[in-house]
Length: 227
Image (cartoon, rainbow, N blue to C red; front, top):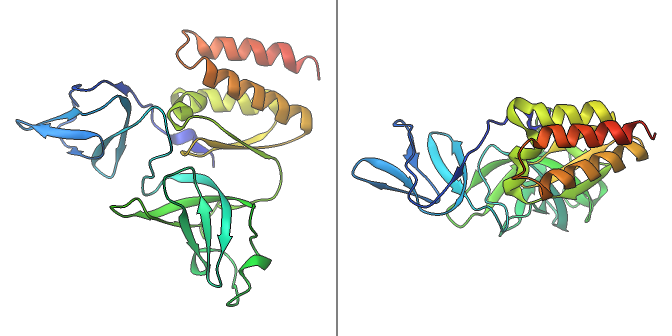
């Protein structure tokens, strides 16, 4: 499943008050006189009862439970190191993949440079992560292409209620998964992949445009007729 179920996230300015009274202050938030406020500019993210502010630029700030796309950068006898566009790499242990991997045989299953779809299972105070691939839908990405956008623009690519990503899939006839870390996997025929990638870049570059959905739809309709 793609990130179609992701809720819309609003942009917060420093000092903006969070209306929900049942949340606790998380990253980029502070509490004063019983109320929670944003401490920086960014995108509001609610996870496990905590309100967080993710910076609009820079690297991905990992959150437990989020699905991301990573690239394997190093291999050990019992685990892989995975770059997920965060300050620190994530650890994928042999116990967290869907295969029975013999000790020292990790490279036979996932090699350096391979792209993987994983879920973050834990994040500590230093943003060190553990990830898993041993759940339905998680896998090594052996086909298609992976492109990268600013993590803060992920909600725009998904759209309200999954509207934008559904439209992209419909017009390009591609499988598309949007990782919360700003990496997007596209799989389909070459023409469809190209069109999807062009549309996604258009969304990123025009994220603040009014009527963006209509703009992207017009682009897709015009270019679909060419194929």
